[in-house]
Image 1 (cartoon, rainbow, N blue to C red):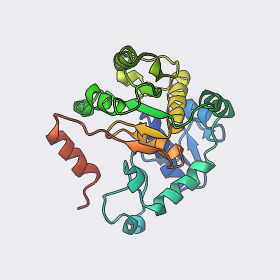
Image 2 (cartoon, rainbow, N blue to C red; image 1 turned 90 degrees about the horizontal axis):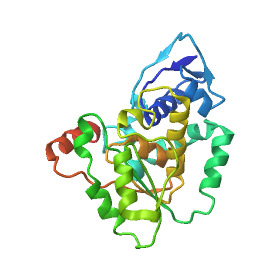
Image 3 (cartoon, rainbow, N blue to C red; image 1 turned 30 degrees about the horizontal axis):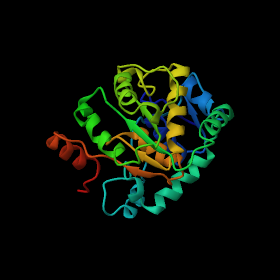
Amino acid sequence: MVTVVSHAGIANRIKNLLSAMVQYKDVSTLHDTMSFIFPSLKKVDEVEKEYPEDWRLYVASDEEKHIPDYKTIDLLYERTPKYFVKKYLDIIHKLKINSEIIQYVSEFTDAWDDMVGVHIRSWYCPKKVFHSNEIFEKQIDKLPKDKKFFFCSDNSDVQQYFLDKYGDRVVTYERQIFNDPRLAESGHHDDIQLTTDAFIELLILSKCATIIGTYASSFDELAWWMSGCKSKVIIPTPINCDKELEDFNNLIYVKK
């Protein structure tokens, strides 16, 4: 048995879990939060074999031939090779979600038809240079003037800005939200309620026909995977950070 010990945010924790599940038959977790969200995932107190913490989805060396144009498969969305889409969707289907969460999300999204989801990550690390409300406003303003959209963010100030501007067009999941993104999206803590709320929000986002997401965010990436890779994804390009954008593109996408 291998144990996933990742202390990252909810999306990267699950990516780490999926990577372990494609390699090992028996996978456990160190976190009560993960075993609550996924009840069939065994919670252990002592770790015999630790799975390495990594935000990237696992690609074996003999699978690299399936990604000739990119360094790996992270954050590729519709560009993800079909080989890996099938491989990881098969694993996702084995990851059974708490039935109460499934029921709540189903009821929340029951009347939705062609819903648009907007997710804004404001960051708390050097990637905060990628954040600006403006690039999301431009995308929202392309929608019909009366069209509602689901909105989620890691920052209460950002959320309030969009609530003030777009009013009752904004649909939100009622949860505790902070103006410190380190406390949001289960960022590096083990509070079961906060982490479960973050996952519920992610799962609701996955029910949107279109996701307007944040550049470099695993939250949107995992929502796309949870949609069965069916959601259309729009990632607005960050502005006024050309050097940082080039560096990140080289880190993630450019194949050496």
